[in-house]
Every structure is written in C-alpha cells, then in structure tokens.
Amino acid sequence: MSCPVLGLNLKSLALACDPSLVHVAMTIDSEYLRGTMAAVHFVLKHASCPKNTFFHFIASDSSLVNLQDLTRIVQSTFPSLSFRIYVFRESRVKNLISSSIRQALDNPLNYARNYLADLLDPCVERVIYLDSDVIVVDDVQKLWKISLSGSRVIGAPEYCHANFTKYFSDGFWKDPELSKVFEGKKPCYFNKVKK
Image (cartoon, rainbow, N blue to C red; front, side):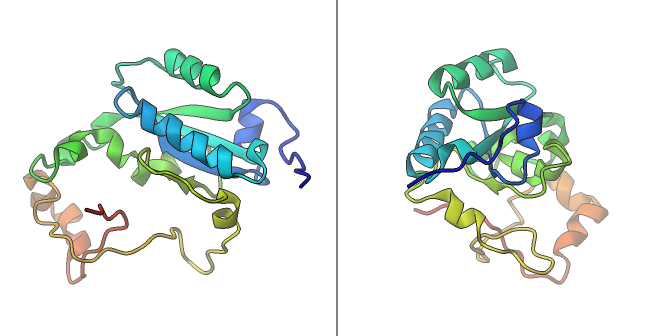
C-alpha cells in the first residue's frame, strides 16, 4: 500500500497546523512517560500512514523533566516523529481538584485535556485525545475519518453513573458559577475507568 506524505512542510509549526494530518494529543510527564511512549508506538505501529500523524504533547509547568529533556527523549525514541510540546499551567486547576476520589486524579496534568482548545495552536481545528495508558490496536486514521456533525465537539462513550459531589473540591461547589453547571442536569463524564 502506498502512503502519500500529506504534510509536505517540514517545519514543526507548519505541520502542527496542517489539516491534512491526523492530529493526536496526549499528556507527557516523568510519571507516565513510559505509557505515553508505548501509546505513541502503538499509534504508529497500526497507522496505515505513520508519517501523516502529528503529535501534540501537553507537559506540566511543574514537570520534574524540563521541556528540552522531554523533547530529547521523544526525538531519541522516535527520530522521525512530528510533534510539538505545549505547557499546561497547573495553577489553572490545582485548587479545583478534590483528593477524595483517586490518588491518580490528584495530578493536575490529568485535567489538561479539558483545556486543549486553549493550549494547542489556534490553527489546530481537530484533534484526537488519547490517555497515556491506552493501547491502540487499530489505525487512528479510521477514527480521524469519522464525521462529527452539527455542534458536536467530542466523540466519546458517555458514563452517567458518577457521583460528582466528591469529584470536585468544596471550593468548586461553593462557587455559584461553577456549581450551577450541574444544576438540573444528569451529570455524565466521558472517561470511564474500567475495573
């Protein structure tokens, strides 16, 4: 099977904006580095055209590994990978996180996916977000080709059996602007943890 190279401009910023490429966003930090690299491996392994995939990595501003080191690690693992690393300011969510749910969710970087529109370059109109603990077993191009019609901004399974009273901190529920989001609605979430 021939694979046409869609992104002809080799500059990282231009590729980051190339709508002909499949754009994948993931978080990256020292704690989940292996998982992120494994997920990238599986995306590339199963991609019909791996060179037509661009990765947008989100790193925390308080990461133990600096951006230059993260860039070096990614480049040494995947020398021909097209990617860019963006910085997520943890202060955006730090005071909204409740530590009463799961310790893994205490990491502010877990909430960066909710800020993708603010973090990525404005020219990126569409992106597939993958958690760093996924194993991709098929071509992401198939997912990319799915049309999200109308006003849809996300395609994900819906999970509506969560108890959100403990999901957010007391500060969240005391803020009338934030807490009214759930007023009169059945709260659902799009990232179900499977047991």
